Image (cartoon, rainbow, N blue to C red; front, side, top):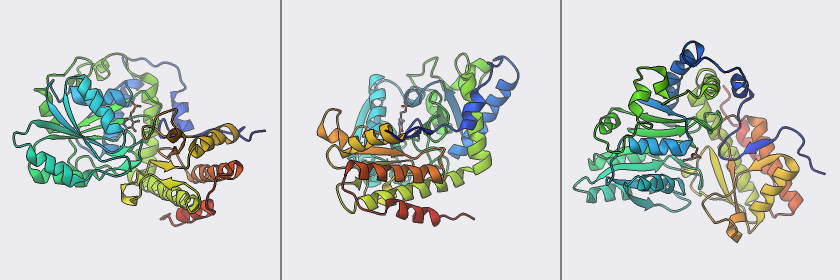
Length: 402
Ligand SMILES: *Cc1c(COP(=O)(O)O)cnc(C)c1O
């Protein structure tokens, strides 16, 4: 007899948990797409999206997932044969590079392994060798969702700027936007991509490309611009339909409006960053408590390099897989698979799992997740240290609740 007959909890790193308010905002009759409320709601989204990204630049909205935003960013700025330098700290840099390569862009990957952040000095050294300025852009994830490594974007930008190299700086915030501090303008990010389904708490299907004037200037000579991905009509439309290159994603827009009301106008973006940091610290403390005995450990050793949106946990052989299955089938908690760190069918595949803690989460959801994993470890007889819930509760109690 299982115990999962309550509200299921999805703790994977995207899609995240959709607030009932967002779902309810979407549950309505189809609106007129030519005039009225939908147009007003759409126009109201842009300033709030820019507030989340901390930019005065532009944002184009695509009916696409994150991969679509990756492609849009490339197509609006680059040409076939251009060279880009891609930072990989897990799996997602490589994924973006694959999109670029398929479009005829020459990619060079700087790989920092599966459990550490970018070393800005290595990037600066590579740019220093590029006297001819062949490298047109640098791509990096802020958070790599496979490894749960978080890169220091401000530090990387300043190392790049110190070299005087003019390459555009692109950052993938698909996992991190709304969860982890991101200051697009202050940090000197030229192009930033995000999706609706993680920190923005809206179902998958919308993605965003934010860009500044330097990137807009690159658009003028980009050879890969195509009618559909072109960000100009989407940001300077003469008619409403041009914002989406066709029919608007009507219900997603109502959902996103509600999500941005919650994030920007009720909680506040910096309070959401603090909430995610607090929950991340509670989860790390729980994993460290389990790690006191047995094989569990955090994939990222340096706390400064850990994501506040997702945590990758390494386990003993098959323990991660057994735990995931128990939590899902017996308890109603779905944990994330170990994406990209090993191949399905190998023993390593089941020796890792991920906890998604992005978006719509509060204390009982986080404590329930930690307690459920703890119960699973006991039920399965997996060796672990004691006191995970206790230590997590202490970390949460130390939050600045003022
Ligand atoms: C989820 C994610 C993607 C891919 O987004 P899709 O919506 O699945 O296409 C890309 N980069 C990062 C960092 C992500 O977390």
